[in-house]
Image 1 (cartoon, helix red, strand yellow):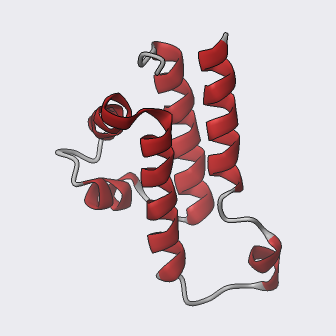
Image 2: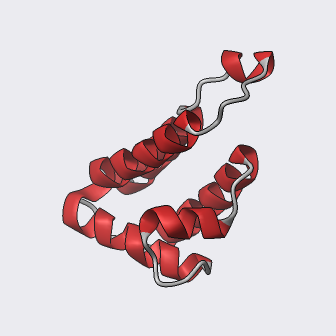
Length: 104
């Protein structure tokens, strides 16, 4: 397992900001689901870093996928554009990018 790096942290931060915007969620929503100490990004990144250090990328990806599933289950209004989108495509991209960076 690759060690946590600043590059991984930066890419994860950018991903999370984009993901929250895309889902119409706030950092407070993410804080609540992560049980982080604050809704500031560094506090939430610390929670995700702990997940990464205990189980690597698979555990981190699994956590993010479970959050995506919970948020998707709570969205009752789905328009036709959203039906054609893959709800996990952003997570798949993150996983691929991190794996590429870790193999370098």
